[in-house]
Image 1 (cartoon, helix red, strand yellow):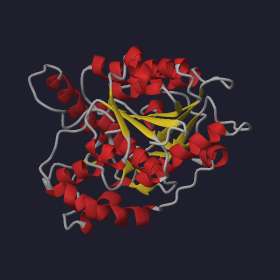
Image 2 (cartoon, rainbow, N blue to C red):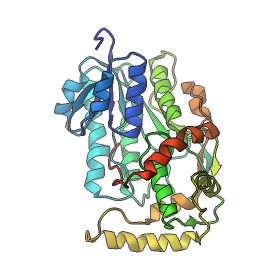
Image 3 (cartoon, one colour):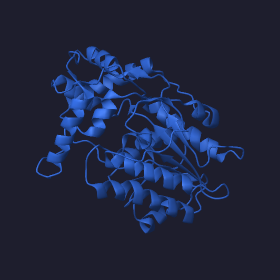
Image 4 (cartoon, rainbow, N blue to C red):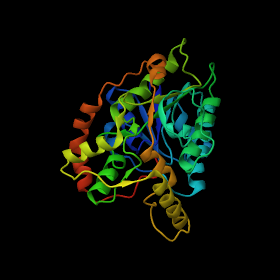
Length: 348
């Protein structure tokens, strides 16, 4: 590894987005330190230095910060179900520990991977921008803890010290995704997917290469003396909202799977979600509930976002459009759904 260059630390490097960021940095010849709870032999083979540590332990993170110029803090506990404390440990305590370790280590820049779910308000989010406030009444631990983590990250920004920016990429997909689209397709193939609501809601997605581009653009913007992005959050998408259910059915058609035609009202989906949550809260049933109130709202409501600010302040521009992104994704998606279904990833 070329130690003359500052090292770039990526947390959550064994995940979909974190791994993609590492591979891009390595391809550009940059020294990479990849941090995760899991072994990362593929990244080691590509030349990354790998570190395994407890993301919420500042002392154990200190060695990982030595010689680091930029931290991409991607690690997160994700999902719609799970113990409250597990989400708090990774998303809140972990973010606090990373921020403190980075500050003590003299790191100059930190790009925090947030989520659009931090502005959840149980209403349609149609073309909203960053002026929309953080949510205050979350029906799931993931958006609640990510909102608090984003608040903590942005509050840590110091123009003359650790400079911080937050990105909110929405529904990242592409080759290497083992959870989002593969799970949707498997449920449709098994006849377990229903159109929730009117079926006319529009959503944004983000192709993986574009999500990586946004992170590197944010790093460059933080490094510019005249930048205005420090201490701010930005929505990141492909900039091409789609009608969710027609888009899913077009995807299924490409895979030779019958379309989803059965409907469920949002009110009914919420009632089912509430019952499922109560049953799964007993701890007697394995895995995640098939429906929750949060998932019902996400499946039925608009959630697409104005990315004008990211274009203006970060220089972000989606390079891969939705049509090309789908073509690039289909071969890997066919392979992914042919494998036995894995348990949903709990961390990123």
